[in-house]
Image (cartoon, rainbow, N blue to C red):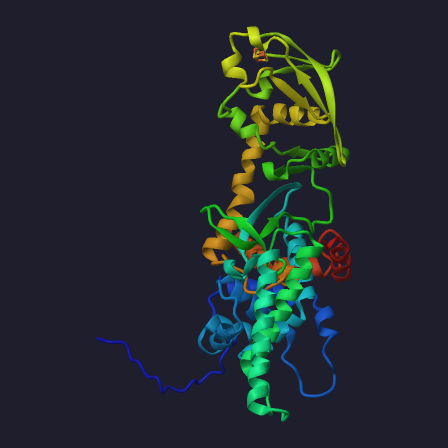
Length: 464
Ligand code: SF4
């Protein structure tokens, strides 16, 4: 026996859009969140006159939902509003064309960033965020070809080439048209002119910022080495919860964030930091070729080092540095008679340098070497590192769609917003919470005294 199948059947009851998506579908979570975010900044840009525009909320919903499922173009969501029930539900059965979606995104890039902050605040109010923050970064390819990254000389050569070609074309045109004017400028000339303008702008930026190379298509992108060894024009995207509105108690970050300036700042702020230096891992794993510096003991009182052969290494000289404290040098005089020399140095005398802030690194290493320190630092692996895996693998975010620092920054914020929405969806499912009820409490002021205005004011103050 087969089930009846009739494509011409008539509905007897009116359709309910909510029936388009299952109860626990992530589109519903996204829908409920966007329903309560404050978009007065976006709404204020709409005119009361003329033809009614699409409401910004459905546009925002389909745009964010697209990012959530790995669709970032404007044309695909247009199609999906006609074929995909989740898109139909979010768009409230409206069918904005891709021009409208694209224009909405580019016009409201700024406020979209504020929406990210509001979502973070919701997460915080739902007690999903602790006072410990993990910081990390990942490289994402720019929307530009590597071949368009050029040095100053290469740019000058290309400018000369285009100018020569333009002179040739002008001559050719003069021969054909004489003193009369053709009714349109040839396309190749328009293209050449546009390219010349682009190259000149790139050259200007390269000179101003004293860069070695610049990408003509996206001037803000920089050539970066990726994990697979390839070099591509890219952006380095940093992830941390910097819109919390309060100071974290713990900060976890990898060696890329180690600097004496950072450690000093965190110490002054009373934040418990776990950040190894660049050589910490190699030294710990014994991967250094010669005796590592940590085998030499510094004596603060005598201002000298003691080497592994127990010889005293006295302070010898300083080296002046621009914008940094003087670097102190300690040179050993016993190396020529030492049996450990081959394992210690290839030079005649072993030299140890010391930055006056080096105690910060030593204290950090000591802290990381404790059981508690190792355990805390390991937490990074389960907090911030999977974020990039999910964003890149699950949502296919391996290359930017937009160009320029501002636009790519916002595009990344959108990816982070949908990542947090997914986190919220997982949280309410795991904890069996009622999202609508919780959001109502938060924006209605029922949670810890928050009010809608309160959230906005606080977010505006904490935007980076
Ligand atoms: S080579 Fe020099 S610095 Fe190294 S262990 Fe021997 S005496 Fe000490």
